[in-house]
Amino acid sequence: MIAFANVNYFEPWWVQILKSIVIFAVIFAILPILIVYERKLLGRFQGRYGPNRVGPFGLMQPLAEIVKFAMKEPMRPTTSIAYLFRLAPVISIITAVGALAIIPWGDVQHIFGQKVGLYGIDVSIGPLYVFALAGISFYGIMLGGWASGSKYSFLGSMRGAAQLISYEVSQSLSIVGVLITAQTLSLTGIVHAQAGMWFFIPQLAGFLVFLVASFAETNRAPFDLIEADAELVAGYFTEYGGTPFVAYLFAEYANMIVVSGMAVTIFFGGWLLPFGLHPPGWVDPFVVLAKILLVFTFFVWIRATLPRLRYDQLMSFGWKILLPLATLNLLVTAIVVVS
Amino acid sequence: MTPYDVSEDVIEVVRSPSAGPIAGAYRVFGETLRGLKTTFARIVEGPVTIQYPEEKTPVYPRFRGRHRLNRFEDTGLEKCVGCSLCAAACPADCIRVVAAENTPENRISAGERYAAVYEINLSRCIFCGYCEVACPFDAITMGHDYELSDYTRSDLIFTKEMLLAEAIERTPLRREGE
Image (cartoon, rainbow over the protein chains, first blue to last red):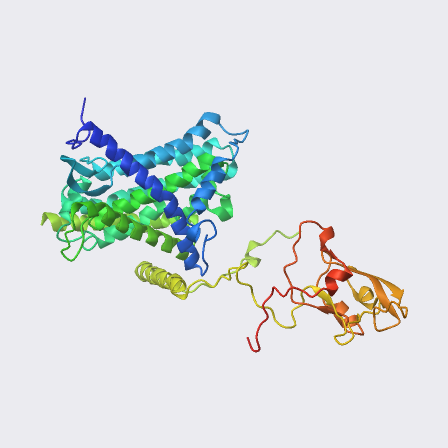
């Protein structure tokens, strides 16, 4: 069998399982908080409070909503294709959770007398793994829209297909500059390579392209044409209700965490701190989490600011501006690194 | 029949000259930053929401809320003489007045007659204030109360006793010059 990637396993099997469970549990505990955080922040950006009725400061709002969704009757349009309709949100959430494994939360630590890397897995193909899963998660959107048997869902997923494929190219190209500077594809290796200077300074163009492409890849405003609610009701998940809808919602936010985590790892030095600070190892995950939260805040800020693009603008922006910019960035970086 | 000539209907739209790719990109970037600044200023400003059930919008003194029937302050007699002018003026036809004669032993209003039945159907009332204008004795006035929701329609038919009763002033009033 051909090994596609070197995975650095040095922990015993029970540590692997334990840390997977911990990462999964922590992220899925954070997701509802992120949702209410986004809504409250969005409210502040618009001069209002956002949800503040359920529980202290409205923090129980996602709980109330999840209970509401979970108690809904599962419904399916008669025109839909049953097994694809059920399968699509599962694909979305599985790929989102799978991509979470790659984000490095900290360096290798000594816990219980074992060497434990504070990350799900450390593969030698790092970003490619994320892009591969993003490519599969696109099937969640595509099949969901297709199997719904509804025009709005279909239009939404068709837009999604074109948009995700277009922006995936720029997103992948934009980080190649970092990869040839760090000369590794392992995400922990990339973080270690940033000990001197975080990559967003020398790779500013790459970072901007990555950020914009990330907005498109996670279907966030101003690129949320997939679920453009003014035209398409809700796009690909128009026909979904109850728990499958929550699955799509959680997949979207988990994808945002993944993309924010990628941005933090690749451009903002992961768990490293500026000003020569070297906190003990257990602080690392909190540093990464804080940085992810900052990137997420920027996502919300952009959502509160920019109107949705027209579809032809979206396409011409992706192909005529982002892609040449990413290529140029790659070219310049390559010349600088080689010379 | 003359053939349709398209050129007559073509309208030339005058556009400003294009900024070009470089200047256009620069402008887009700058405008995006300006937009970000604008939205961030809203956070600094703070929310302008009025948390309704806890805080209420103060109303102006001339605000037309729920009606009230008035009494003379010195004698305690009702001002309403049952003339039905309010019912006649009402465009929504929501006032019902049945008048009865005052007798020396049962004196209710200051005039000859009084309103034996006085009902306002508040689910129909449009709060135009014509009843207040029509009343020759200032017997009916518009109050400041606007929290009038109820569970059944029949509960919204306010009887004379309810209209005469001292209203619970739940609504804050705007101060002078506010």
